[in-house]
Length: 211
Image (cartoon, rainbow, N blue to C red; front, side):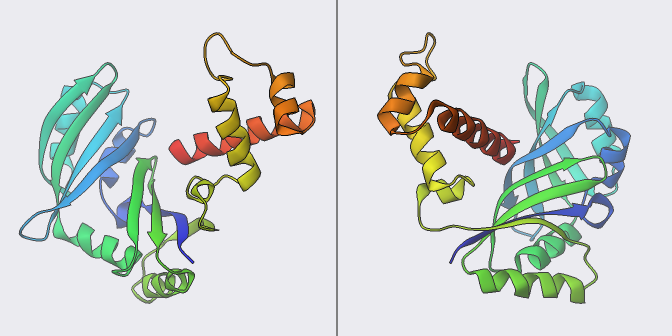
């Protein structure tokens, strides 16, 4: 069964350790990773809450960055594309063990959080053993199997997915709301308290997945 793994890697083992330590309060989010012809990684990276000139200069000072280009600026966010050193690709290969797909990568403080999708649960153990053999510190935070339902991809239970889907279709999230919680609970055949708890937990799960 397909399995989603979320875990952390120290920035000193991966990339941008100097940058993350210089800006410990910022979050760096990889938008896309492109493999260039020479095998190096060229990610697009969003940075929130920093001036463009300052962060760009720090990137240039970072020993893991070959080159950096400012692509776009939106309010308090900047989008950069950069060329990382080839050893970063080796670390990524160790994490995925040539089997997993990277879903998202975010960096903050002194570590990177990486979410990966493995085709089979057995591949997770193989990749973890491979990291141990090569001395890569990868701390697993969560392992979640996808049960074939759309809900599984986002960490929702089937009932939470049903509640959110009904709430959206009935206009609960519109402004102004088109249905009250009491009315929504009646449609779903559950108590008002059960609906309220399910909405809170489902929303919290989606926020955790997104952020």
